[in-house]
Image 1 (cartoon, rainbow, N blue to C red):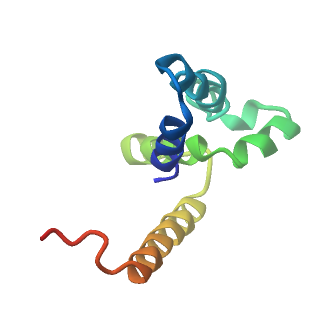
Image 2 (cartoon, helix red, strand yellow; image 1 turned 45 degrees about the vertical axis):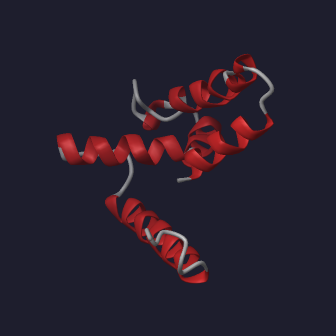
Length: 104
């Protein structure tokens, strides 16, 4: 949800297609490399491991790794808490705008 909102805001302010490609090039690509796709985050130095824990891609990668392989760098409790937090936030946003998703 966060990335889709970011993409929408990026498209609002972009004046050309080249402006749209700045965000994936300079933000999403480094986030994907720090997300632990190609390595375990336990191998990183302490500073970069702490930086990676704030990366939302890390949790998506580890959720997929947990679902497919049955093991993850992070505990499943943290991912479960994050899932319920996102679920609760989206429920409360929907309750503030009750007619937002109603198809007429």
